Image 1 (cartoon, rainbow, N blue to C red):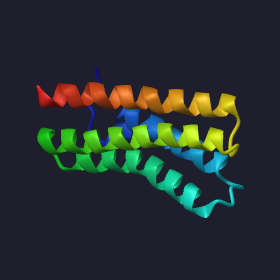
Image 2: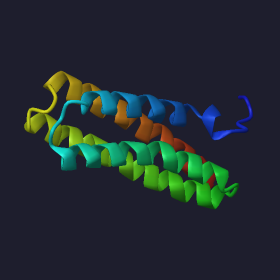
Image 3: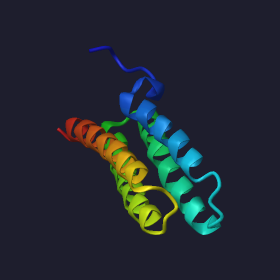
Length: 117
């Protein structure tokens, strides 16, 4: 396993970055500004909390920020249920995005568990 020297080296951060792009593209034409803003905030927080926690240079602090990022991944999944119900996105897209966010959440949880040992 390669030593991780920067948060950009973390697979979970890289995946969160991809999810940001997808969410922003999905919400591009959405005129429900409040919904769109909340979705944007939630997905950005996944990526940023991973980065911020890593930069704290403390396993305890990093684990805490990962926990927050994991919560934001859950929020994104929940919002895709609402987006589907409100017909902002199709069912297949919502399912795909929820699965992607769930995968990121699992990766975050694994790293968090390792750090808390």
